[in-house]
Length: 450
Image (cartoon, rainbow, N blue to C red; front, side):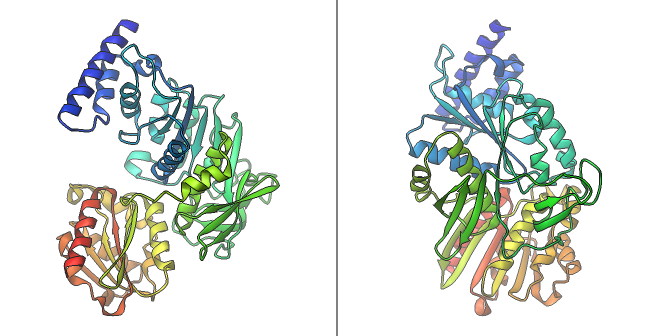
């Protein structure tokens, strides 16, 4: 097997060099070739002595980027799969790139984004010292089935020696690695919290111990909040890292650790991005960075434009925001954020999830798990839908109660800007799928030229 490893290693090295000559990113292809030649390639490739893995339904890319940026800013020699994929071949490519010709890694620490379903192909070889789980929600039905299915995959592969950093407000994330040491992060009760959420989906409703319906001290969205069972002693764990205060005016958050509290700059005022920042801060504190070191680096960070961008164009605030297709919770959180922004708004929806969206039946199913009802708000004056499935979104918005006179639709996504009535709005939102960032950028350019 070692002989096959060396063949795979050098073939992959040559492949990476060739791709660089062509000025192409060597993302996953070299790793895919290496694993094809040697299925246990990840067992033999050298890796840093400390490994952090980040997984979860939403936010793992943002959290990984924050961890990487802060570590690098503080002088750490970091290996990551930022330019590669988050499956086994992408991680293999990253390890190959940073290994010498005698298979010795050039890095001290690795931060890997790991696709939940790929856990079983990765953790048996790449054993993380720490696993950060941002959250676990319902995702693509065709790909991820149900959260229980995903939890079973992760638990079947997770090494017992891995320390798990889990979202204390998410009971499903907390069920990962029951035999492992856990560190928890969460957000204290907010003014906007309720006794029971009204979201369409809630992926855990009953106690996993006695099957009694769960109750909440406070509920945030979907199944997130501080839950307890009225029939037994099951409840949400206490947070080791707890956001005690969110100051949107000063753009600061205060995080309590045991008896001490620390102040950090807030990268975004959306709750889901505060969770992302909290997850990154938590693992960085655990591995030894000081609060001052972390916050000094946070001051230099911006959320990448493929996720969120904001600028003023012709006296209108224009916000582009990633809204993942086939991911009902991610979409619902974005819709809720749009609703919460002050002032009158127009919204452009370009959330077809792939180029062949017209032929994908799954594009229909997730629409009825996502809370389009959140867009039925007085402050949202107009919704323009673009893309080949525009009629499906149009119908869903009508079923959500959005008045027909607020809705417009057109198949050509680049013509959506022509339908905006800018007279009575202060903010224009462009909500785009991960595959539609280029379209969103072109729409901003068209707005500049109008």
